[in-house]
Image (tube, rainbow, N blue to C red):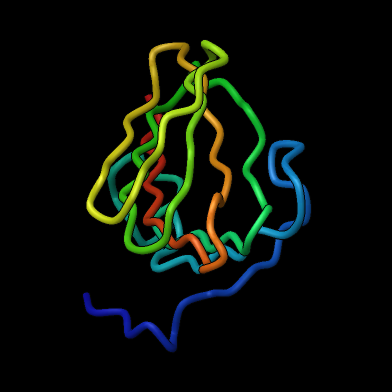
Length: 116
């Protein structure tokens, strides 16, 4: 199945996981279209200063693949790590993470959530 970018479902979520500002979610496929345990597959866009708040993954894994921009991630240890295009983050097994846009450009990343 091919889904063209202009066919993605757009959703603006203020304060995702108690983060700051708006997150723009572009869902490529619905969970009913994917036959595996994927509950989200799409892009997330954060403008400057916007964030996804710190949250835990106990019943799923989440993969972030940075497409463009510069962000930073706290994996629950209070230490911020810089991420740029091509970097990938895997969070699961009770782990924590957040994401903050650290640049003037939009931060865009692919997010895939795989339920256990």
